[in-house]
Structure formats: structure tokens, C-alpha cells
Image (cartoon, rainbow over all chains, first blue to last red; front, side):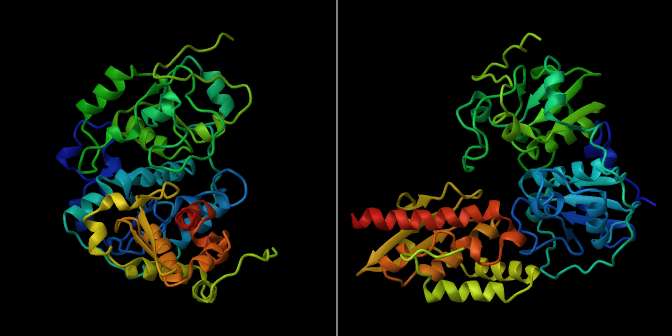
Length: 299
Length: 147
């Protein structure tokens, strides 16, 4: 039985406001049966340094990625992982994290690959919880293990692979990396180590909307009019479009996937998790450099 | 893996490595958190002269460090934000393990030290590159000041 949505007026205008909860809502509902709070961060130690009471930790790298093959864990491993965190198939899962919920959105996207129905983000993430002086604890959460069914991952609906992107060229692509990565000056985000791609630039026709533009200064998502201005007016997306978003490894674009799907209501958005670390090293795929999207190659 | 002749792990770093290896995976993270908590504030003189500090580009989080020698004895200072405890932990391990050693001893530390302290599983090799970056920069600084 899932828990009633946060009816905060702040979420009015979003296509699926039930996908967000406010810090106040979470504080009121902490400890409620059926609710599991998950922290997912870039920094693997941030949870241990202090977390929302009762929250469990899921790490994108050590928990959600397969340790050998470049892929996500399979249904059996996912079931073991989330079951050990006390999550059942019908749990309401609220995810929060650092960096404007960047990694939290990534975790939410992976939960969605496994069809977990009720998974939400804490609007504003760690930064807002902290700014409001709300409680943190270092006490380890000891969840009671739950039975989670082994569900086959659905890689066809919200995930795109390189061949899907090649077939998609000419349809809307959103490159959510920094302008420097888009133009080809760098292959990684400013202030991040250079690594992982042999060539620099972007996929032809992609429009550059850096992911962080969707976040307000306090870490919450911007409201609908501002998001519409970014994605519809500037990037030219229209209702009914099939969209693929990408970044470097698919984490920043999972944040944009959340915005387009759950806040703006686009129904056919896929995240290309191979992203630039695959495209920028693949043989004979088209690349455009410079600030302009460029043309789709003739077929 | 065989160690080449010119690398020697100083007792200080060997002690830190052994502390980590004696623990279960989950407890290793807690020990790293202890190191993060222990990273001392920068000495006053650096707070007034942030230009003296070097940014460690290999780290995902902003970390700045400064290496100095006094009579051949190395001191390593570093700072990283509270929101980046992993990076603080790495910096603290190196600051505690390298400070007080002679220049030659620091230069002889094996470059793969970060990969030998039992954190590849709990933290991931990708993230450990940050500590390798700090160690590499420390050595480069020392070589440059010797030249």
C-alpha cells in the first residue's frame, strides 16, 4: 500500500507531482510503515558522515553497477540489494542525495528499469534538508530484510543503446553536459578529471541543455514555466516527441530524464547511459564539434 | 605483484594499510570517515594565501593541498569541504602518513599505495584515483623543489 502523495502547492503544474516529496512531508512521514528512505550520493562516504534518520544507502557505483560488465545489476542482484535494505515491491521509496539529487535521480531511474512503481525524489535533496537544519544521524540503520521479487530489467522503454541513438539521429537529442564538453573543449565536466573518451564533441543534432539548469539555487527543481522555457522554448521539444538524453555515463542525463518525464510529462524519453564515454570512443560514429548542434548525416 | 627495488612503504603508511585490512568492508568505510573527521584545519598562513594551494584535478571534489619541506622533512596540508568526506579521508590518510617523513622516503612510496589499502571494493577503484592524484602531485612537488 503506497503512501498518499505530498499535496504541496509547490508541485502544482508538474505532470506527475506525486513523484516529489518536500522536506516537510518527509519529516512528518519518517518511520511510517511502507516508507523506505534511500540516500544516493556521488560521495560514497557522505551517508556515513550523517544521514536522515532511518535512511538506507544505495551507492550508484558499488551497488547499482555490475562489478564486471559495463551494465546495471540484473534482476536477482537488484532483488537481493533492495530486499536487504528493507524494500518490498509495494514500498514507497523516497530517494535523496547530494549535488541537486543528481545521483538520487540516477538511482530512481535504475529503480524504474526494474519497474518499481512508487519511487519518488526528495525535492531539494540533502542540501535543502541541511539548510533547514533538519536532523541527521550517524547511527547505522538496520533495516529488516524484505522479500523483493526477481524482476527482469526492462531495457527497452527508458534506456537507449548506441544503435538506438544511431537510428534516432534527426529526432530530438538532449546533451546535458557542460558547454565545454558539448563543444569539444573537454571530455569531462569542468573540475572533473579528464578521462574516458578518445574524441570530444557531441552527437549530431543534439541540443545542449546542461542538467543543472533544471535546479533552483536551493537544490529544488525549477517550476514548470521555467522548465518549459528551457526545454520547449530553447531546446525546441514539443509534446509527443521521442527524446533521448545523454551525458558522460548517463548519470546527469538521468536527472534530465526525470525532469522531462515526471515534471514536464514527456512520455517517450530514454536515457542513453553509454553516453559520451561510449560514443566518444566508438569507431565511425558521427561527431560534431563546436557550439552548434550540427546536421544529421545522410543515411 | 612484485615490488620494484626502489619503492619502500614507510611504516606510517603500512600501519594505516594494516588498520584498514584488519576490518570488514563496511567498517573500512567507517575508518575512512574517522580519517575524514581528523583532517586538521589548514594552518593560518594558508587561509590567508589560498594562492599557495594546489588544486587536485584528479579529485571529483574540490581539494587543495600544499607540500612543504623543512630541513628535509615533509609536511602535507590539505583541505576539502565537509560535503566531500571521501576526499577528506584520502587527504587525511596521506597527510598523516607522509608528514614527518624525509623527501626520499616520500618519493619511494609505491604509486599504487591507494589501491593496496583494501578500499577498492567499498569505495571503487574509480574514486581511489583521487588519492593516487594527491600522492602523484605530492611527489611532483617534491621533485620540483629538489631540482
